[in-house]
Length: 388
Image (tube, rainbow, N blue to C red; front, top):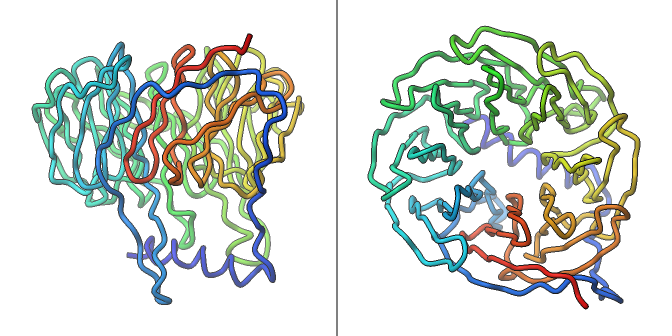
């Protein structure tokens, strides 16, 4: 219960701590769009949940219900329990399953195994081929981020700060490990990542933890965001976005903290850049891309963390974690607009709409195509090409 209270408290304290609420930047037309964006299909997986406040207002409770792509199939899940598979090229619905679970995180797919998690603690495994239920278990904590799946385990983060490992064949719990959770958080849970026989995940206490995939014993822990300041809001230090593992490096970012490049084997920091974000990161060939707390989109040099460019025209528009596509950096915002930025300069190259509803989960880029799911479960697929 304290996490629901904490979520409300964040909103109320934030409102009290500012005399004037920062207004979202107004969009201006792109003078010379260099990319052509064409909608190729749309689909839906159902509704969303809302959280009531005492003043009668309804605030959207944004969950970790993104998209997963495997080969030519796209998987999606809605809060009301629907899980579905679509053809990536045409949007044709291949199958759908009603789990009858208030879904909060997922889907995640590996081979034939598709896993989703519920805000009631349920973990449901389905066949990725036809949607048939394979197993179902219940954990003692809400799940609001996607699991991670491998041939050896299913890693699930619950909102109470516990990382669970389940058997991919039966759902039986293999081990669990826990990090203390502050009384006030951003009410999020980072997606765990499985890499090099380890499970790596961020936590609400500002730490990134790496444990052995075999038994959950700790390999290393790194502090990305150190609580500081006098007020509870100032001391928020969540690491909400998933880490990125590339070769032997780990990239991560925290709220009121830093962007860090760490050694995968030891957690040793290679470089650190002061930043504040409650989103994740995207990794390009030469740069790390992030959306900051106030909505700026920033590119950092992968080798040393130096700022390459910063695009501030989307400030306070609650932009998503970026995605790196063939033709630019892609983010979406609270009004459902999808924006393409130049990888080298951050200049706008294209913009389109995706239903007029907030997008909280990051877009998915596959070559010259981009997929977006908004907060009411509507999926939009776009194809991008250069303007001649």
